[in-house]
Length: 212
Image (cartoon, rainbow, N blue to C red; front, side, top):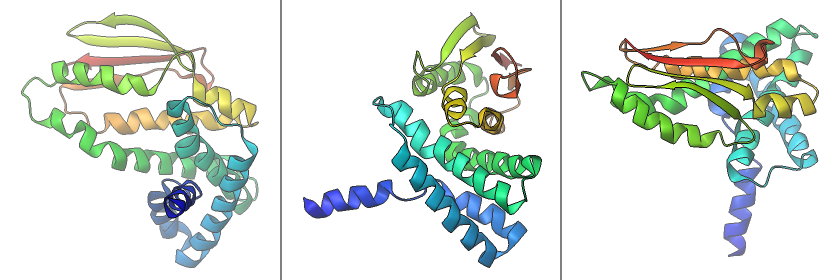
């Protein structure tokens, strides 16, 4: 039992989703510099983890531990690496988010490739996926749930709230990229549209999934 507890604690102290980001940055900085960068990222992440009072809700804790805090740690280290160039750091974190989500959702969306009419299957899967974004941490206003379109606005975002608490609300927009990344897996019969997000300064995020 002691070994099991030790194993669980060790896993919790690992930097989540590091592989994709490490490969991406190695192409820019080289292997040796990337090792240094990621040792700093891990130290930042563990510091954030120790300082935070994490949510009791396991879904919200998952978002914070697996995505928000690692992304913030990477951003802060890259800011130093780029001598305070916010745009350069943002661009790299955004691409790491994109590549990570592409990799993690490939199998999730692969069944959409097979049906001649994939939108009904998408709608069924959509209901399951949305359970990963519980209320009241996210607030949704549904505009349409029809065989032709799923449309809704998000008026509250957990990522924005947490990153605002941590003093970096501007970083929220890089996580908006995750939705675009997932949509890259969609077949041509499904269109994803979004014009504004809270992370990019909007009052809400407007989502549309449309049958073509």
